Length: 205
Image (cartoon, rainbow, N blue to C red; front, top):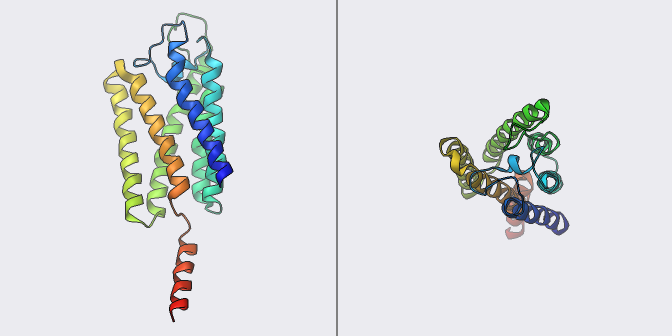
């Protein structure tokens, strides 16, 4: 477990660093508060490879650690793979970027926005699937809170477009941070937990 958790933490640290630091190194007029991560990884953006690599590494690390944490829970794994695949494809198909007057691939731009929407939907479904799988009330409450925060930050991006970059960064950092917490702390195997309780009862007899 420690190896998979370390891989995830490395990917998360890389993702956070690139998401925060890259706007200050580029020369494309991209600002931290106003422009989102899609703009950092856009077709004509200087250093876009760094953001796109961070997207891909974060997606792969989530698959690796999530596969270990969920193991035989195939339904949840399918939702996880659906989400991470869509998220990773946003790096393959890049958006037009800030300056749409420059020549860019319209198909890639359209697919990027499509996979962004699919990834958001996939994360919501993942939260819902976790909510109904978990048995501890505090874990279900935590999952519900993350679900509501994700919706709120998504709406704030639309309502206050001048702070879209800030809200999107908060959204992604909270979501992937919570996934690490969930994979590490949450007990997804109800059967094993029940077996442990039975064993304790037998020992007390």
